[in-house]
Image (cartoon, rainbow, N blue to C red; front, side):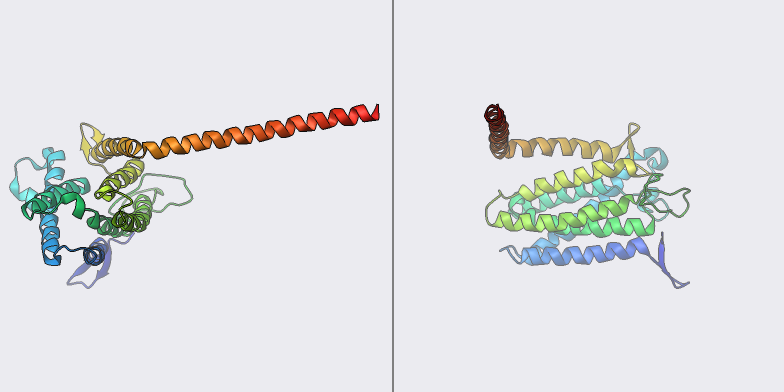
Length: 286
């Protein structure tokens, strides 16, 4: 792992910071491309993005401090001095970002569920760069493993999982899926806001699957905070999608049942025909 990408003695360029900057500009570029497809004012939408990012960072820090209150207490300096007392919550950032963005849209009389779909692909783009940066910098450490895909992290013994790298690949895949779904929404094949629910489900799924493969966690009542929250939203959105696609699921099961019955009937008919042919052959020889 490479925490410091360049060391110029008088200044250090950190690997994770470089990936965050790359992710920030790439996600803004994707967002700009998406907004150009709409009639929304670009400057207004970017105002919402930057203000929501600021509030999201504040809420991210707030959630982290609350979950580690025994280490911070009511010391305000520890709260703001993030270099000396590092720590942020990704889920906290997402909640803060969405909450403030909702308030911003409300003040501008913009329908939240009509606009939020254009934020999803940039969101997954940022997550991809963030996770890949976490892997190469060693920010997120995987658990000990004997799996053939393994690596060593600086300051940790034994070979460990490439957890952040796995998550990065999943989020890269979601970039293409979400953009395709956005076009389908614009064709009115899905309702507006569908991509928002998909993003909650997909993010919760990835977080839920890989949380147990991480060394460090944020704990709530002795349980992983990310695991609890992602599990709750994964279950909720999964039930929602089952209800939403219930007619398609029933049709698929019905077609599958009929197709299976046809296959069984064909097998039975062929087997019966072979028995009849054998009896005919036997009677002819006699």
